[in-house]
Image (cartoon, rainbow, N blue to C red; front, side, top):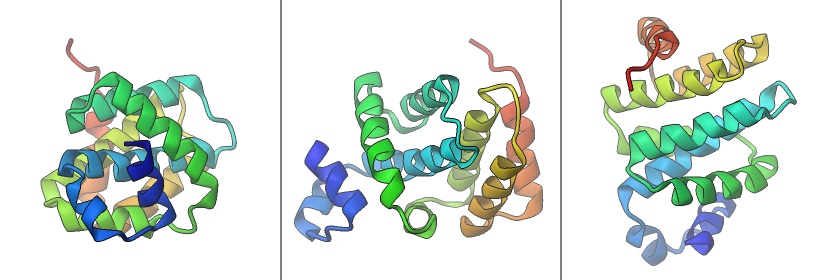
Length: 153
């Protein structure tokens, strides 16, 4: 599995291996990569944000906590090599409908809120992600509002 993650992030286009990866795992990897980029934008990777990333992956992408942690660890090690958000948002655009992209954006907002504050750089990056996911301003604001609401347990 780690090899598949490395290949995704390094751009290895071995189609046979990429095709074998379940869609939920591909979604989790792309979404996690965006969340890692967000957690690093303020140059202060907070443990609460990292835990929120794991929680979002488990809830939204049907992966185990162990798989979510492995995906997160790999995404963190590859985050410095990423040249653009487009490589991840492009994958999400290919795999998701509008509702799915709104759920991803809501998860991204949850990561931003995890440390108790929204940095101006975080807000700007989320706006860029929303644009790259072809979400309009209303969808952007609705996702933020839903992420701010307390979650029922």
